[in-house]
Length: 98
Image (cartoon, rainbow, N blue to C red; front, side, top):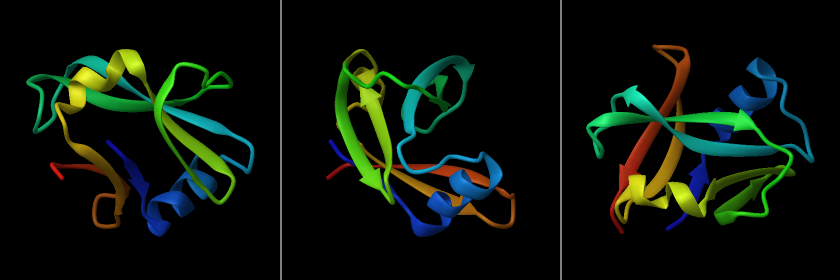
């Protein structure tokens, strides 16, 4: 599994949320949400200073994005692509099987 952050999504994280080089961003699972790969669950993110349980990570412009081992089940073999949807002014998660 891999995580990819588009340039536009990275810009959104920096400008809208204020994330800077050295920050760690954890993608985690929320109950009572929607996603195309897991009914009743959605993906969310938070700033997290501890990435020691990271099963997958990527670094973009000095910001580490990661998913913990305990949340890998959600992805069911899909890679995570994080995009920015300008029309909706929000992040968009795409799940693609390799």
